[in-house]
Length: 244
Image 1 (cartoon, helix red, strand yellow):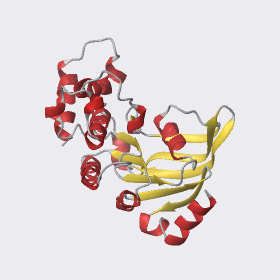
Image 2 (image 1 turned 30 degrees about the horizontal axis):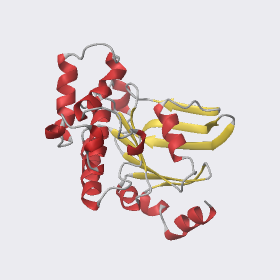
Image 3 (image 1 turned 180 degrees about the horizontal axis):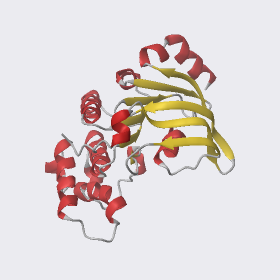
Image 4 (image 1 turned 90 degrees about the vertical axis):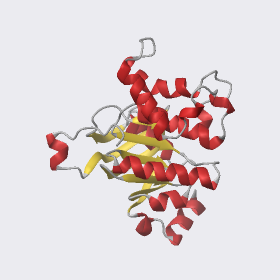
């Protein structure tokens, strides 16, 4: 079992909602990107954010991660600490001289800081994350030399090494081959079973349908929420993509 966060008395009594958004709006440089979202994201479950480019998925992840401040409305967080945020693979340029191990060690910086030596516990968490993702043998490789699937697993390992109870992922399977997509999907199922909450923005409808819940976005507005089979209907998807 991977670093399962302990449940405090409050979460033992009610694990229904880890995050509650009420009339929440957010944007960049005065430009609105999310409009009055009201929803609840369940604890110990997986939630998929679905919608076309520009629908607000990445902005919503940024709000949940705490790196984008709402312009109005509220976000009630019941997380044990900071969220672990895994960006798109393109956010880590190939030219960066980082080994896989160093990449995963960066997941400990939020608690330790970039200039302090890692403790024995930090190294144990890094080793555990590398092993969990099946990339221990790649620890000495440069991140930019990895295949797309290997690189994505390294970034997810960095997220797991943070020891958070909330894992946020931005398009974790985009551009990957079917085997790599299946491996990451299986891993996300495992970490939810181990006591994490997972929220992923995705264009992959297979991954979205495998989630416990789905939020469907269009032009920064929430147009559907609930079980994937109920939300991701042919009519709803056609309406969202046709209108952009």
